[in-house]
Length: 226
Image (cartoon, rainbow, N blue to C red; front, top):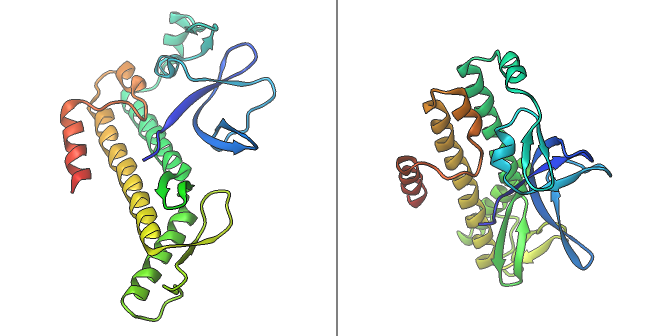
């Protein structure tokens, strides 16, 4: 399962522009970290430090050492006309969006050809599910587009389509399903945490990827273990 990493995009004055999921891409001889589904402008950069602190602020600014709230308490209070339920709904939408982004970003799988990355967008999931079905038919001796003497045709991110051994593809699809299941189940449990909160500030502090309280963590572990 690959590590989920997040960052804050800031402008040339240090102000928050966007909260993003970060992915690693290969550029010639180096690996670069770039935002997923967000194009960095020439005067923007990524900050990975104390993201939770920045997310708790209305208008955070990175000083080079720490995040600083740039809106006064009185201004913040005057602006905050939303109800607790509205905060919950916004947070639930944020969590759902981050879950989808994490899944779409994909998973690393150690194959017989080395560690390969596989995106898991909706289209990727459909393609993989179709190939799993074709492989099952081929193994059962039924009519299938998969020729077991060649292997299963599929492609890793940024690579040409190639034939994978049955063992490799079964591992790829299994780890992809496990990764998706984990993200969706974690999202479900984090949403429950949001619904429990009785203070706006507590709702605002919740972020996708954070550790769950003991009871929810135990429930998550039990669900994933099944």
